[in-house]
Image (cartoon, rainbow, N blue to C red; front, side):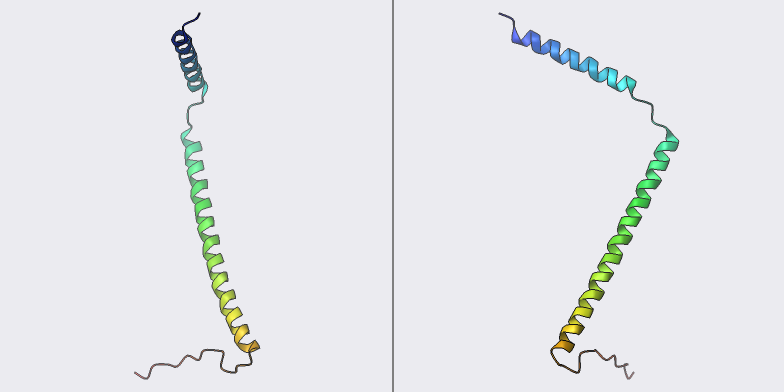
Length: 88
């Protein structure tokens, strides 16, 4: 009967050799490629933030419009808020 520990040691050694071979086969990182990737990531983040901001603005505007329509549909005449300047 074979010793299971010995078999496990062989498997572990084989996997370590595979990992070393994969690391050796990987290309070296190119600084220009890293810089371009960083710029792309920043641009994507800015675009995502812009989309979230525009979405937030649209949701607020649509909500305000819906409240105004609900007020008008209920027959009220004083739906629009009137801005009164301060008398200071």
